[in-house]
Image 1: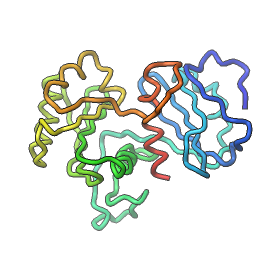
Image 2: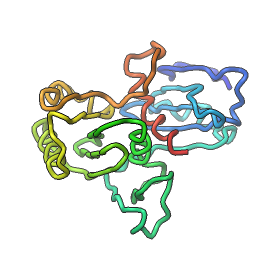
Image 3: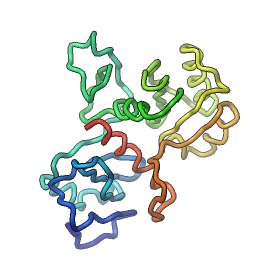
Amino acid sequence: METGSKKHIIAERFLDSGISVQLCNLFVSDIADFKVLSLYSTLNRKLVAYKVITLVDAAHEEWLNDSSVFNDVFYLNTDPDFELVPASFSELPSKYNSEFVVKTQNKGIHLIYGIHHWMKDNNGNAIVAFGHDDLLSVLIFDHDKCCFANTFKYADQTEFLYFVINAMQLVGVKQEEANLKLDYQCFHKYGLAEFLSSYFQSVEPLQVPFDDPDPEIDDLPELLMPNHLLSLCV
């Protein structure tokens, strides 16, 4: 699958000629000014190819225009207007082997499902924050158990910090033991990560655990992370 012009592509890893696209799932996410496309093998669930393109040029991308060639296509949902309902109390069926159901008006796999699966392989607690303009969604996990999930409207860094710490206090997480993970939008808000770093044990971006990432752009592991989280769900 080759494009005639690749001016719209910011970063790319080509699909190995020995891998059939029909045995790959395509995961699609919109992050800041980018659209990120990731191919994962259905055989070993590993990342085999990706493209990072500009949103304004997404209409010209063949992976999107000819997506029927893939095994399946999954889209990221980061709707801040969500409700978490325990699976045992939900009228909707539980999805993605999760103990809860994320109720939202938007389509796609909600990011919370992916973070839940990711936490199954991570020890300890994690506070995850992802942003939508002036809205902040805060998740608190104790191993793979989601202890808190809510969205707040904030105006500045101080309010951002207040809402995160208030959520931690509600579930009994100590600041000095807290590991704060920020999505791409939050981590790259000017000065926010530096401001928060003195209040927590660690402040890090949500990023794909690459041992040797391709060097096209420094932020590549962060941009690929949402699709990686989605891939854990299917």
